[in-house]
Image (tube, rainbow, N blue to C red; front, side, top):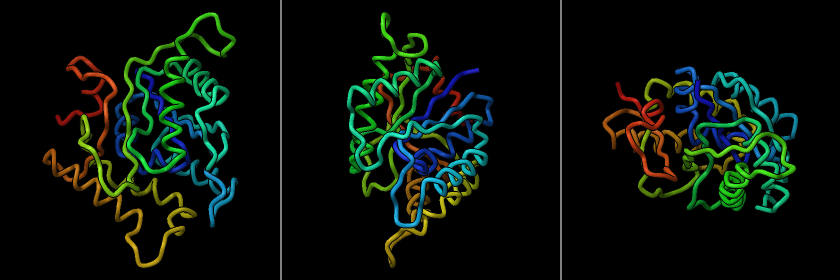
Length: 232
């Protein structure tokens, strides 16, 4: 069984970007863990308890067995040494075979900081002779997901067919009702925006819905990439 670690700046980021792929991986028997760097608060219609309950519902929908929050400060997330060590310890404890996180370019400062935190922690997690919790570990496969709040997207390294998991993805996003209603009037909803993005990337590989990813290393046929992007 392969261990997959997904790191998100806020609760709902993982669902918006890659819930279909998460459901596909858990359905294939992969051991998936989600770590939220912050609790996502404050927001206009949320609270720490509300966001925690929403994340728990989404986690259950996706059949993810473990999810935790590092409780780093929302809106003030920085790639400090202290924060990097917390992420590195999470990697050392979970020992992932595959690591997902946001990727640049992105507009949200917390997302940009998360990219730097994850990449720095990925390296630090492998170090010996350190006081970090857990055992030294190098995650050979790092993939980046694209946040759907963007208006444009760079060409992805690969796209996962999530057609069979589209309903699960939308259900997991709807778990975050406090964030869905936090939306400017007379504009496209987050559900509609996500559908447009997934339909676009799906049609580019000849399927109905797809989720795009960036690979931080060259892809080859003997990588677990085949597991998450199989069209068989």
